[in-house]
Image 1 (tube, rainbow, N blue to C red):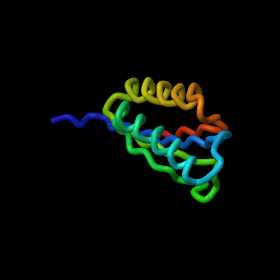
Image 2 (cartoon, rainbow, N blue to C red; image 1 turned 120 degrees about the vertical axis):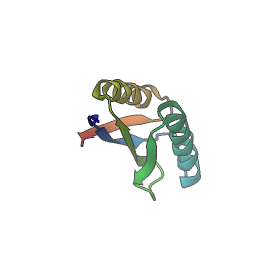
Image 3 (spheres, rainbow, N blue to C red; image 1 turned 60 degrees about the horizontal axis):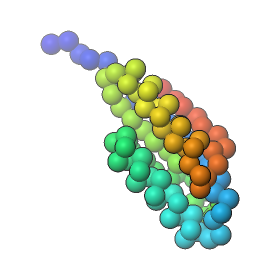
Image 4 (cartoon, rainbow, N blue to C red; image 1 turned 30 degrees about the horizontal axis):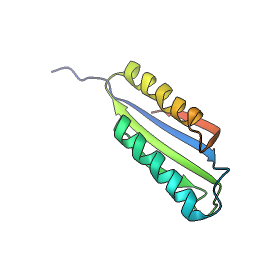
Length: 98
């Protein structure tokens, strides 16, 4: 039996939430975004940074597949969601292939 290649991508998105006036409102925006991403991409998503700042967050995502082409497509779609989301501004994205 031949082994299929396994591709893993780890992405971090640093975001600014300009209309957030409290940690509670920030968490609402982040939770909504995380839920949508999990449902759409079946990815592992976590808020990974700036946990105590009410206008910034780092969202980390991990996806795995035997098809690098499929992951490339999903990474592009994931980034597009962050770029087009009206409640946030994407400050930085970092993509690592493992």
